[in-house]
Amino acid sequence: MKRLAVLGMVIVCLLCVAVLAQADQAAVGSAFKDFTVTKIDGGTFSLSGALSAGKPVFVNMFATWCGPCLREFPALEEAYGKYRDRVAVIVVTVDPDDTAEVLKQYQENYNVHLPMATYNAELAGYTSTGYIPTSAMIGADGVTTFFDSGARPSAAFFEDLFEKALAAAPKPVEPEEKPADGLVNVDGTWYFYANGQVASGYSGFAMYNDFWFMIKDGMLDLNANGFYDYNGATFLFTAGQLRSDFSGLMMNVDGRWYFVTEGRFAKEYTGVAMYGDAWFYLENGMLAENFNGEIEYGGERFSVVFGQLGV
Image (cartoon, rainbow, N blue to C red; front, side, top):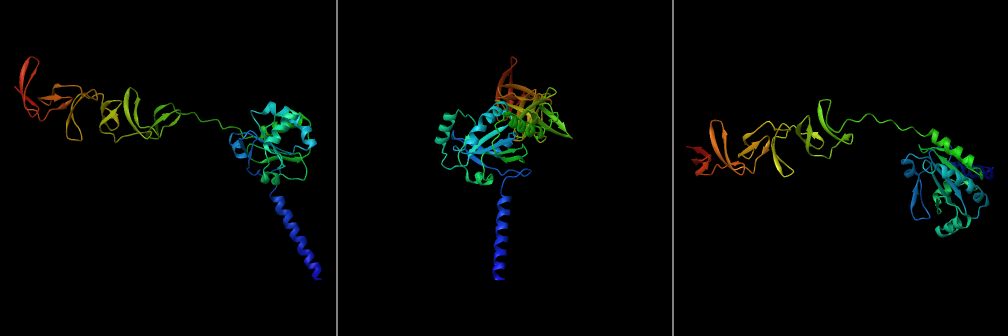
């Protein structure tokens, strides 16, 4: 009786091992486990990388000593030549002794030009059926649509496999019409668009309906008030808009008076300007509030007291 109990436990354990092994094996209808293999040219191939490009992936497991594997390569290569721009193909050896140099020599000896990769223990175990060649077709959504062992020396078979995978691939969603570049009002908020999307990294000037506006982090900066430098010049803004309609003296937040011409600080100007009913003397575009003396203007001489002209 005791022996029967022990035997029963052994059978249960073996069944558990079998179920666990099966659960960790590729299967049609299940997401194929991500993998990365080293190609014989030194680069890498990853399932996730190929899928991110929107391509179905065909994986072929083989070995250099496998005769049936070699017999199906011409057919696979013919199909691959027609679909290489739309379907990713990778051929991976299951033999650790098939080094990159061995595989390169194999390709040269048998005139094989398929993308090949060296041994990967995890992938070899995940696709193991006890037979090679073993192939898996993975849809663009990452789900296995074909998984089987045995050589298929017919290009039509692989082409049909590729076509079905492509037909099942999610169709690209047509992009919504993108707003034109420039300032765009979206639900009452003004955004600055570039290349059809909000230019959140842009801060600077932008024109809209022949007027200039201040942009900060891709949005109209309604708090832009005062003078701002741009491309070597200084401009006057009020509530985010360049004051191209204004010319005259304007006090800045620093308490100093600036002379503005059509919204631009006239820093090159030295002369006189009127504010209210009085005339003032300016140097380099600013009120010369500390100047006392005489100046000549329009053929006449004027006395100046703290920047204000007196006859």
